[in-house]
Image (cartoon, rainbow, N blue to C red):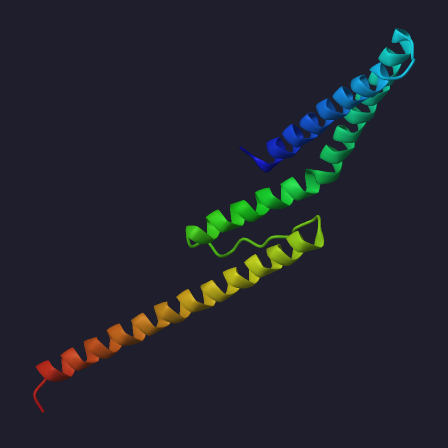
Length: 135
């Protein structure tokens, strides 16, 4: 299950618990039924507004996670050209920068390995040529 769904389920459960507590508390008071429905309605409206605000505030987090996932997939396929500009919480910005640094380091390492492999091939070719050519 995605993080977004976990957050929504947690919010729904807390809303249901709040409504149950309101019902229980109201039944123990001397309040008319119309006022009970009013209180429950206000609780529901406040909960839905809270959920909407939470989703709005968490959208940069979900967007940053999506970008980080894409860069991790690109790095896994040896594509180091992708740079991430993460927006959102400071932790995600730092994580994005760490991904960018890792990508640059891996690119340099693979480039160094390729150069080393080329030098090795040239040396073997020269040695092979020298062995075949009499002095």
